[in-house]
Figure (cartoon, rainbow, N blue to C red):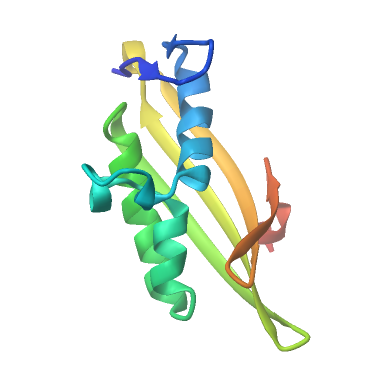
Length: 137
C-alpha cells in the first residue's frame, strides 16, 4: 500500500498513488545526492548513477534498475522496474536512449505502471518522453 509523499510545495502531502508514481520519477531525475549530508549515499538519484557509470553500459542499466527499485519500494509493494538502454554513436558522441518502466501494487492491490524514456547525451538528459516506441523494434 502506498504511503503519503511529502513535498516542499504548496501541495503538502500527496496521497494519490498515480501522482506519487510521477513525483518519485521527477525527484529521481532532479535530486542530487549532495543535497543531504545526513542521508548521503542513501539518496536514489540519476545524478549519482550517471557520474559513476557513464562509460559502462551494463552497469548503468543495472544501477538504474536497483536505484528505481529502492526508491519505489519505500512507497509501494511488488515493485518491478524494467530499464533498457540502447547506445548510439552520433558524431563520435555516445547517446543513450533509456526506457524506464515501473509497475507496483498500490491500495486495494491495484497495479500501477509508469513508462518513461530519456535521451542521455554526454551524461545530460536532453529529452524526456512518456512513451518510447523506438524500443518496440
